[in-house]
Length: 153
DNA sequence: GCCAACGTTGGC
DNA sequence: GCCAACGTTGGC
Image 1 (cartoon, rainbow, N blue to C red):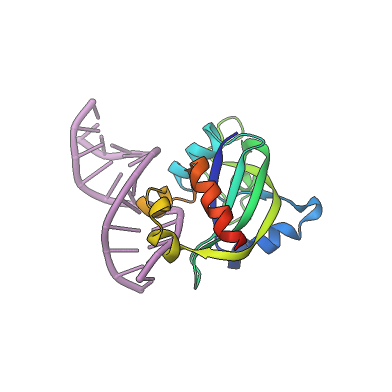
Image 2: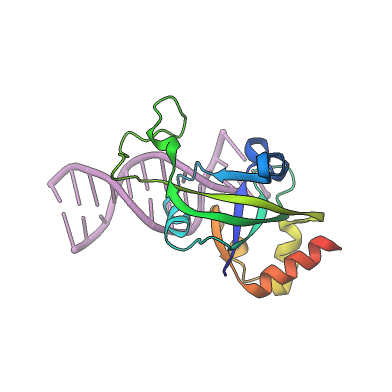
């Protein structure tokens, strides 16, 4: 099992939106960045654990956890001309974009802000700190443990 | 709203 | 097959 961090803009799809889904399972779609797609398509597997991160908001922070319940499949939104995620260069036999399904697992007692993560020596090597602008990224087991502990405080 | 970092694209 | 241009992302 591997660990990941997924970013979402809370105005678009917050952890509360995920928790409110039927069965608390939601489709993680709309990924239109190639680096993020490559992780999603090639490496994210059913059963993997996810840190849920709120981005592009007042206080960017890790806010909870989720679990991958379905590995990558073609993102249906790319084929829908009515959808803002429509991609005219994608076709049914050659999909360009992928999505996964995740299930809500937990909401942190206390969100862990990016500013705090940056200051924590144990988390200084996180991709989140090293490279911005990546909405799907790997997390080590140690980083996962540290963040979950911080979120429970 | 600026702009930097990244992978991909596509003209040559 | 090089590499400049492009689209996306997201903290500030």
